[in-house]
Length: 203
Ligand SMILES: CC(C)(COP(=O)(O)OP(=O)(O)OC[C@H]1O[C@@H](n2cnc3c(N)ncnc32)[C@H](O)[C@@H]1OP(=O)(O)O)[C@@H](O)C(=O)NCCC(=O)NCCS
Image 1 (cartoon, rainbow, N blue to C red):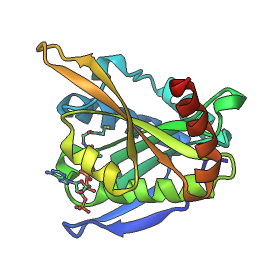
Image 2: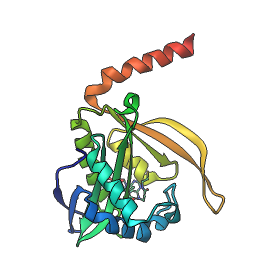
Image 3: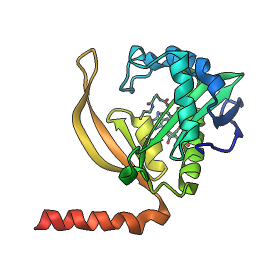
């Protein structure tokens, strides 16, 4: 089951933040969080109106995460309010089920206090302990310095750059950087594919 161990963390502003897997009862809280924050982030691919904000849909989505072995949704909660969200979905097809994509955000008023780092750390612990997973993928916009610094410090490496992949309403164009984290005990496995790729380039 996609579930992380519940923990409490004191952020840099001395607030007690609870981290746990999302429950179906969180559906309205998740929607509120998205409604309050999504358009205030300068680094998300989806506009708030492009995110499904139907409580029933969200409830089913959370339930599906809990049932799948290679998916997890983590909420950061303060004063009974969701202040951070992490979502990981592993590949649906068997051949790519050992990899998946993670996305994270922290409410604007709570950023820069250590919450994002802590949430990523507990996610990585869950992922590395999950026998189904060998790596994690994410995409980050080229101008998102805070997120890039965070991911690199956690061991993610740049694996590709999709040039000009994002266009904002203002016309601003950004690259999308693909990063991967390969688990220590999966490195030998991953190297097999790397060798094939180098051989193909040389031939
Ligand atoms: C990116 C995000 C999730 C990070 O969470 P956070 O709680 O704000 O970050 P933290 O306080 O845990 O800091 C994480 C690390 O970012 C880096 N960082 C923080 N502020 C930074 C800055 N101004 N410039 C560069 N790096 C910075 C530091 O390495 C920091 O770790 P450290 O303080 O332990 O050294 C959060 O800021 C956010 O939601 N941003 C908007 C949405 C978003 O960009 N999501 C990610 C899309 S890929």
